Image 1: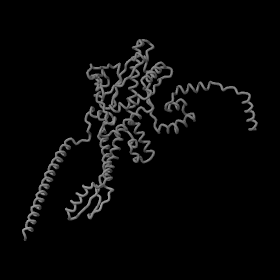
Image 2 (image 1 turned 90 degrees about the horizontal axis):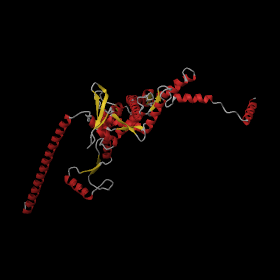
Image 3 (image 1 turned 90 degrees about the vertical axis):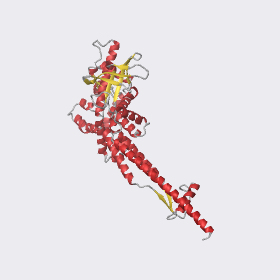
Image 4 (image 1 turned 30 degrees about the vertical axis):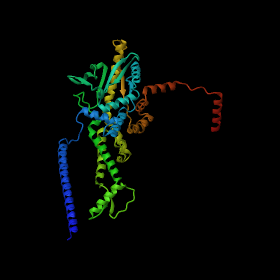
Length: 456
């Protein structure tokens, strides 16, 4: 072997040794990195196991704060679903709005007049009833402050937000359903305290023995709402990945060629849609799709769970394909009626109490409280009509034939029609029956004679 060949061989040997040393160093670095990663995963798994639970919202404060953010669209997860559920439930709870009627036709005219003026002044006969129902769905409770408006000569009802005020309700020590006061302390100001004559407080969830803890309906499934939104996002990420497959060139047994090809691709910044010539095997690599089916099943199952917890039908949550037929859809509407019945009854009580206290305030301010002409709220009743498909079917197939056949009175039939004031309708019919038809003119009589001749 010549000196030149020896030197070349020695140089190659040194380069090979150096290369092996670099590879060994890289291997050790990767092994160390794998150990660190495994350790982190183990620790993370232990920590996750320590807090592994199905409910991430363990306190009322935390849940209401999350619901507030989700409804306003500023939370990380669940904004779409939360806003949809709250708006739908509020719409069905109030349904056709607040209606006030006399218990007996001959009594309560001035009370009804006051109630209508009160509802109109506070917009409770329009959008505010829906707004208050929405707020109650977010916070699980409602607080109305009542005060006399001297300028308008009417009682004003103002909504007080727990989210903003963090008010505290003090119950009677022997009766949890009686509230002695409501108080809160504004920032940098003195405590504000309301006495029973000047507030109406109702809760729509939680235990009776704790008036301040009022779990909203959606609170029980907030974690499922988050998981549903995350599953939908996972599907979006999978779609994004599959829309960008990874191009791969293989050079079996020739690592130097693979390294050279990679270097060349990096230099030219090659992208999909560009022409490529190579002596290696070219293919696209995509991740497996096995997890997608499980994600789709998770999305549907979470939608069903949320529907069951909130009473909102699955097709209102976007799962129209889960409806088998028309009868299924109608049954789900009945489910929404049943699931909002408790809230509707609570709201009826809230508005009856509001009217009673508003009348008391008005009588006290006007000096009418001790007189015989004082307003009597017991002469009125509050209703919130809710009409389902079954109600219309009963009208068509049962009450209408019975009324036409004389089996039931027209008054009973009218009482079953939503939105009809029976007393006003009967009075109108009576007045119309007493009106004599106008006398026919001479021309009209001639036309009648001609018609009679044609018939003959």
